[in-house]
Image 1 (cartoon, rainbow, N blue to C red):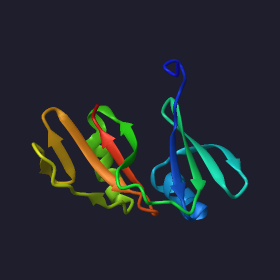
Image 2: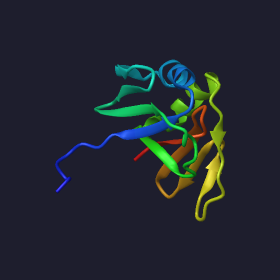
Image 3: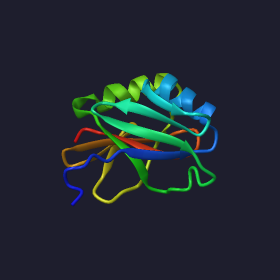
Length: 125
């Protein structure tokens, strides 16, 4: 039914101006469209991400968006840290950490939060 349709990440924020600085300035996403003061749509690879204002921003305690970055996980962690991003550390079964990168078998993943506390991940996929 929906298998041939595209899905996009949708991220709720409280302060769109602060979110815009983070997503454009820190993460380097390119804006596709704006909907007044309520939403911004970004291009990320071959997909898109919608960032919109909501009173429920930051309430998700799980990963909201994941970037599949291949062998660039470590390089992107270094780059984002240089831009002030703090990475999250989790105690997960069968997982060890090398600095800010979690390793589970061949999977390498690093988690960080946006200014509203939304959790994002970089994974080698």
